[in-house]
Image (cartoon, rainbow, N blue to C red; front, side, top):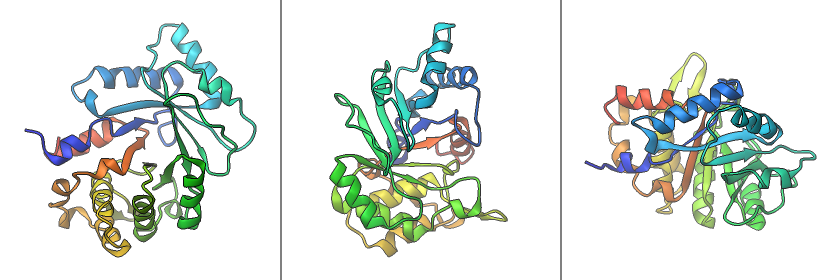
Length: 255
């Protein structure tokens, strides 16, 4: 039986295995992506994400026998970059870069994401994304405690995107379904994020959306049923491990 959560999981997880903390070698990352696409939960797997600076390495691995990802997302950074090279890559479906990066409009139906400055002014950032005709990208965690944005800041992003009819993708720190707090601080959960995105689409105020983001697992039994419609606002989640969120969902009987 299809549930709101199972429907929301389709192609939710962009494969960021090349990025920290996993930082897999290219050949291992490509092999893991191919296994995920061939596995029983292939429906949840989104594009393979690759830094623009490593496209030649990706192509060399494919030439040596690795499976080419059918869908590719290219990540660029600030500074000079040959975007024409990236735009020519086979299977390209999306490109991502910081808001301040000089990234030209990609060809055809390739989606462009611009990443908001971490902890920066929400309205200014979203207005700039809107003016660029792009989608927003937001970072939800990282390797240090201060890399995790507050629930209120993240709620303001979701509400601001809903108000502007912007689509957003999230990345970093979203390995577990529910928000959790431990010795290393708080970490956002992707089920919370989906439910918060669904609520933001109803034009709920920031405080209400932040309360959903701040709900921890002990109080979050209702959240999986509240994610319906969230994907219309939240396009995908970048994760360095496809297996970890799937294992967490399976352990809770949610997959």
